[in-house]
Length: 391
Image (tube, rainbow, N blue to C red):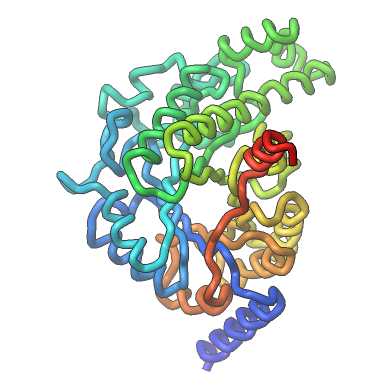
């Protein structure tokens, strides 16, 4: 009886959400974590689950810890079955079932295990000078797992202030977009971990060269200089934005039909001030085609608030992200319903791996049927074309 009541409540919630929006949800996406990409059988299971849930797009983590779940000349291979190409297999299985495939790449985060990578060609070994440091000039490579957790650091993180890092990401994303028929490139960890990181010498030096200001004073004085602090914060935002610009330019040059999206903190103000990720500006400038906001909170009131913040930016380019790994689907749909009602582009669920088979039906009912996931023409491109034609 309890199970029946639960299902009826879920159905009512789903039907209300669809009817309030007036039409089916456009983007019905799932993030797919790399753990289940290692074999054909595991990918087949994921595809079946996604189809049952009514998905029309998968965002698959093909470069997590700077290891490739595809054929790469840049990254070492991840641990997969010999001769198996997970990305190619995923595309071939997903497309016939009406699903886009976006290649999810961890941008600055390149290692998070408690031990160093075994492959000597891994970027962790090959380029220690590329990594972000804290205010004491300690590299993120040198943090232990307990120290990472205490510092809100996921793991070893590259610095966007290093020009070679930006070019590395441009080459990496272009390699995927050129060699595979993906619909898009999806950048995750395209941000600073928090304000205490980013004091690597190359960044401090370039900042001083541009502004004449010494960012090290923030460490010495513990952030007492408001003008310096704001200039430094803007510098770090510029470094992240410049990374996105570099990737965008490479994709336009090498694979112009490939969409570019980013996973971002859901609150645009916190994202810009705390994580140096000014995604609202990226949308306004047409730098990215869409963002997936990570609103994984279990607090339904907070979830609705985050959905409204996303809808208050450029809603047709915001795909609202919900978490089902830490709460029930009905609970997660609270924020999703608000996002749909306020004309966001769609919903992305984290993650397909953690979705139970009994939950797929609820999601398929929630977002309805019959919508494609077309994304608007890039604003920046449209402006350039219009001006060039005197429009």
